[in-house]
Length: 136
Image (cartoon, rainbow, N blue to C red; front, side):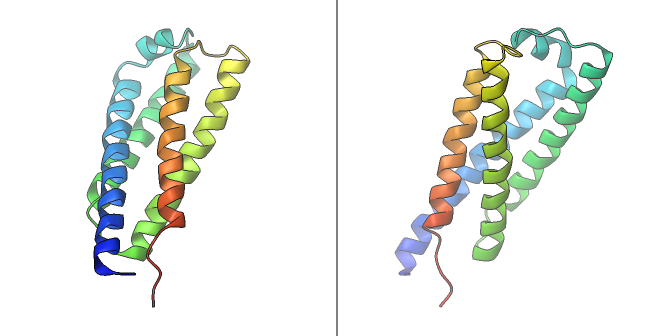
């Protein structure tokens, strides 16, 4: 792969990881600090266990976003591949869970905003994995 193509790929990868990191940290903070409010936005009223699990999710999203932020500028193709696979798995599964939640009216239509965001980031990650520079 030409140096300019590799540089462009790294730029797109860095942008994806940066956007995903920022959204994960913001999402994590919201779920961690305001679990009841977030549940209300999605049309649910979480009980004690629901609030507890929501906070666990918030902590996980905060940690994941921090990890992504710390590796966002990595030039390692192998490391970048691992990060992209993790984004694809996490957000790909989140799309399925989100769609099921909306279909079965576990959440309201606001859940579709997260589904579409996760879908876009998943497709972006898949594209980058499919076009990643190969070792020679």
